[in-house]
Image (cartoon, one colour):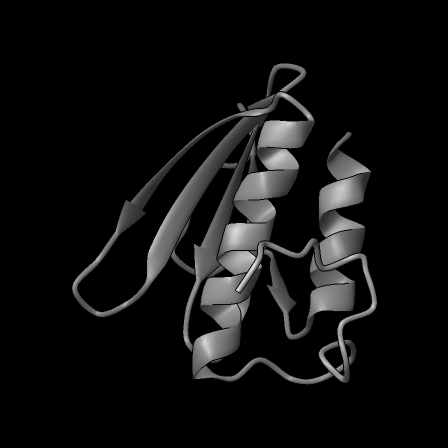
Length: 104
């Protein structure tokens, strides 16, 4: 399957709650978005299937937690440290697109 950005209409993928295979597609699309916009990132994949994605942009630090049933998002700064409980829960590609575009 060719890499397709999630902002493009792709069948009924929009507004659908995340399923096991979808979060991997959304992770890959997020990486493509970060590369396209020259944002610094690092990620770590865990044996559970979860992926922790760290993003740096404009002196800010963000953490995405890709899980089989949801994506967590947190902004970390001097006043707020990272916690395993995300600040926001992302349940579909539309929500993810809004969060990503708000970073740039």
